[in-house]
Image (cartoon, rainbow, N blue to C red; front, side, top):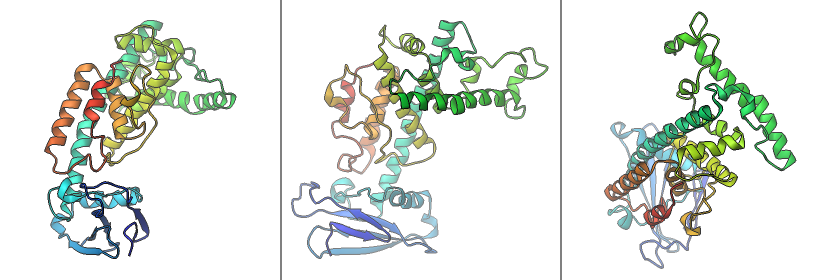
Length: 357
C-alpha cells in the first residue's frame, strides 16, 4: 500500500513525499489519528507509517473513560474540520518519543496555551482600538453619539468599482446601520442585563439621549467595531490613526491596511474565544505595511500573519511582551512547532523587523 495517499475512514490525507523530516531522505515517518464512530470506549487508531513501499504498521490505542477528556474531542475535530491538514513529522524529533497518542496530546496542550496567550493580547488590541475610535472621533466631531449619525460614515467606503460601491451601500443600509441602531436600543431597554444604564431608559434623566460612545463601545463586539471603522468617513479614519499612533498624516492606503489588520485580530480573537484550533489556522488576508521589508510577511493568511497584525495594533510595550511570552511558551513545549509549520522557524527575527505604526 502506498503511503502517499492513505484513506482514513471517509477522509483522505495526503503526505507530501518532498517533505524533509528529521533529515531523512528515504524514510518519512508520519501519523494519522481517527476515531471509530460509535465506539463506546472511544477507540482511536494511530497509524505509524514510513515511506517504504508496502510498509504500514498500525497500533490501536484504547482510552479509558477517565481519559476521555476534551483532548479527545479536539483530536477528532482536527481531522473533521481539516481533512487535508497534514500531520507529518518525526516524533523522535518533535516529541522525543516513539509514535503514540502523546504526540497529539502534546499538540493539544500547546494549542490550548497558545490560544490563552493570543486571546490575552487580542483583548488588549480590542480595548486599545475601541478607545481610539471613541476618543478620536468624538473629539474631532464634538459628538459623543457620532456612531449613530449617518453623516460621519461613507456607505460606499470610497470604492471606485460600481458593483463594490453598490454592495457596500446595500450592506450599510440593510445590515450595518440597522444592526447598530438595534444594538444601542437593546442595551437601553434590557433592564435585567444592564441595570447600570437605567438613566438612559424611560423615566431616566438621560432618556432622550443615545448611549455615548464610552458606554456603548464597551458592550459592542470586536466585529462591530471593525465595521464601524471600515465605514467611517475617510478623514475620521485617518484621525483615529493620528490620535493613536506616533506618526502624523496617515495616508488612505494605511487605513485600508488597518482594515485587514483589525479583521485579522478579530478572527484570531474568535478562534481563541470559541476554542477553535489556532495551530494550522488560515484566515483573512493581511495587507503588509509598505514601510516593512518584503520578507517580513512570507504568508498573509497563516497564524504568523495574525502576529503581524497584532504588532501593528498593540502598543510597543505589549507587542514586545507578546513576543517574549510566546518564546517562553515555545521553549516549554515538547514538540517541535517549526517542523510542524505552526510558525516560521525565523518568526522572531521577522517579528522584530516589523515596524511599529
